[in-house]
Length: 296
Length: 280
Image (tube, rainbow over all chains, first blue to last red; front, side, top):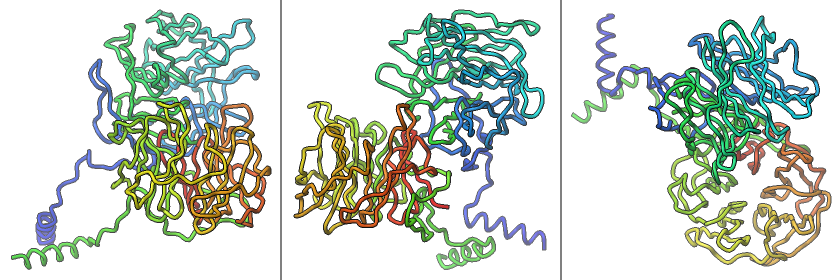
């Protein structure tokens, strides 16, 4: 009887033209799921191509969204809107994030400007504008996750000058450890910096000037997203008349980035805080009170 | 042989429990009986459905037809921006019917479905233009209605209501006043009354086909935050509107909010695309 059933199924598969399902056949779920296709970033100098369709990852107003890249049990961190304003929030990928407690917290008179989760899922660089000094600086303390919902400051990655609230220095997500790197934009000196973690928890991280930035030519805004290998950088900004999401890559760390290219299939709205996953499979962006992603 | 094949397919469909497929397009038709509230804005879930996956905005609809303004480069047109027309409920079958070297402020498919009112800023002449495209003319320009005042940069005319006895609201930027216009003869509109209760600026106002509800969006205070807004009235022929209030269930950064006639859905623009949210 079992053999007859198998024969019937095989015959009917033939009649109806049904083939075995393949891993890449799976459609993308409406809500967030792990990428199910073997994507990879383009060769250096290339440009990733994203579909114009957007998928709503979850319904929560979050900025500065970033996800870890351990490969399993990954999480996300961002700045999300709660009743008291935007707060650092953390949780599983694809689900609304929960408010976190930072110890010590940032000074009450200032706002957190960015929250950048490390790929190792253990630490986060928090950016805030320090207005206690005559020249405002953006400080980037590093917090370690010590228990559910609690983060403890372990040192300061560095501080970068800005021009006040209008031009707040930016910092990227860090690379994978050890000896993590992060890219920062110094609006006063108009240059990209590469911050590198030293041996044995020494702070601040060492700073290397990577390349000058001509703000008349290119103007990044919001957040910088650096892939865990440190080779791809994504940001929202403007080059000439073209505002949108830009992508720049390089062959190795501590080398300048190639000229950014506009990812023209993606939304051009400001404040999208794009985040590129390690394999360039997905690009997350904020907007319309939700978090969305586009896929290659 | 053909009969054997059909028999085999039928038998296998029965064996696998395969039923006829039903169309379920990207932007499916509404299948639940929604209603507008007697007062106050309708409430929507926060699930957003993408309607068009090209760069578009100003989505309006009439019956089974819809129109939007889109970037020419996204739809293979040499124009900067285009008027894009297609079936409501599908992202297939859309076509470009007009294009400009300029910026479409609004693209309004009127409730009767026979005209698209386009308001745009023309880069070559640095002027604001009002052009009507007629369906019977193959969406070519037809006679422009005579309004009581010229369309100028910063003005915001609403969608008109359904014929007969059409009405529309018109925000004049020059003196920040709201006017209710009435079509007293085909193509001729008179300034019937002002609506100071609507307050100041409202972007992309949409008056419902029955003249009872008005939606739009505004900036909040002096910040760059924005919110969609709603008001309604009980007398569609020139009555006062209630106080303009936010639509809290619509994402704050949404633009061009357009309600369906039964208030079941709100179409909105954002992230260089068009989405809709639906009542629970």
